[in-house]
View 1: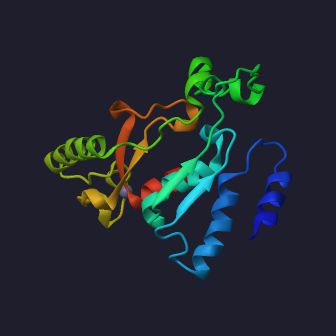
View 2: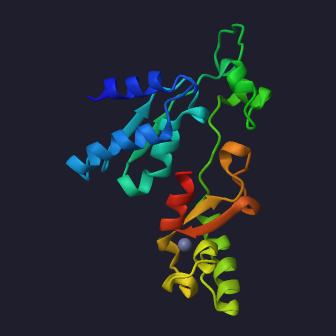
Length: 193
Ligand SMILES: [Zn+2]
């Protein structure tokens, strides 16, 4: 395994608490270059103390369909869910994050759903597409303001991905009001920012 590379990446970025998303992406791409089906029908187990802030969890959740994963299990530490009680002190890093919720952390662990469900995606897709067709522009808002051939392109649902209008990392909720559908290219470009 190439865990050493990830460990190096982690220590190199000592200004950040967790392994960087881009480093994970780089590392995983090396596996995919070698075998594009390396994750197909596999279960990925991530023993995180804190999946909500784990870039690994985020990375595999976002690429779940692309990689053809069967299951993604991300562990969390939720003190109240345990039979035994012990003092629990969240780190400053954790409490200063926009998504930190003192009650939820104790009862549910820290996993916060950040993937939109299918009905939400379909509903947003329909609204955007109806509006775009009426206006003669692309149903991807980023394509619509572009200058290339895709400016008026109507993408199919399966050609688009759901995006948080206000980034999840900035406190954006996974609700229909904060959901927009983007073509896969623009969604990927936005996700890498
Ligand atoms: Zn687009």
